[in-house]
Image 1 (cartoon, helix red, strand yellow):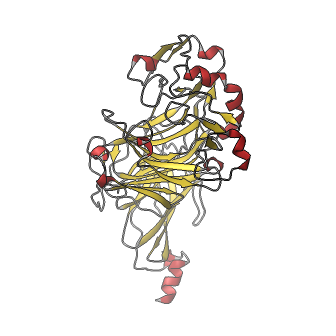
Image 2: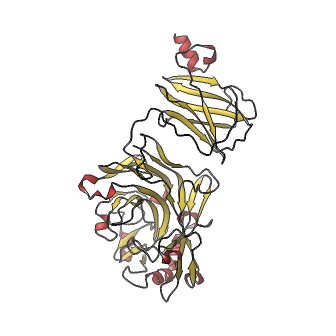
Image 3: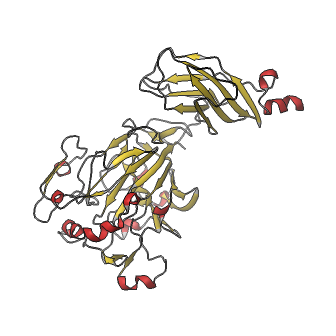
Length: 451
């Protein structure tokens, strides 16, 4: 028995009869490109690996041109997806490896000839543990179902997953940011399997005249699609981008692995937004950290004498939580906070939210740093939300008056009707802090799972 198990562990199981038998593999290929393979999740399985060549033989234990592994089953199956376009008549030669009950099992598969291509993958229903998560208007789900997943491994943003905003939010509530969201290659693109969202400061001529975003506009008000500069009511001084998930959901675990943007008056938008926007804002911030390296109240001359303390509102401070009001002090009433030893824009972090009926738990790099008890709050969070990712600049609620970024005072007052003009006139100071690509929001992946 020991010798038999040892042979299994060394992968020579094709000549030894072991208790575990690798289950049959299924392959599904899509018309639009991409395919997936899967096996059922039998008790004791801990890893599934797939190695293949297309239209070419593959040797045992050779990695193949297509290979991947997973240690996490989904809804009763072990699934691997590949961004490779198969054609009718292609032959996939493969072998698989499964770790089950602490032993390794390798199996050479029979070649699979592609006979048909699907419009979409079939819905898999294995051992479903009913989840509290609902999606797209109340549809049920199973625990660990992947509601949203994107690792940005395609050449362009996947519009099956995301709606790309194209509108002017500058003169609309709730936050009145100083930027447009434009669906153009300059403001949002994928490079090196990462989503990049880039704020771009515009020129003197671009804050005057007309901004017409009517074609493809995603706004709901006329001034979000077309705006004409009048006096000091400039056009947005910054172009940026924002994407919003097409799937809505209630409850779940959200993960966003990202490097936040650096630069004065820049704000990352990593949040849940309610599908029903009537009533109070009730957004849920997943990761909010101002791009100013340091942001203090009062006298900038004392900056050099200050150490990193709780009164620094800049990039060392991470905020998350439910937002029920747009203005302070109510806006921050239910937020949790984490003060870092260095700016959060310096490194990539994994920002997570675990949302249940009773609570919101916030984590960074798998460490919980705060939670919110929803039982003690209004019933604003018992509804479906969408996930939004983007970059905003300025606004009349995100930066308190009488603050100083480094030695420079905040250039506008939130109550001043000329706030856009004042911000643009200070461009020569804040633009120096937008260092090359450090002002980009860079996202590695996004995942939302049912719980």
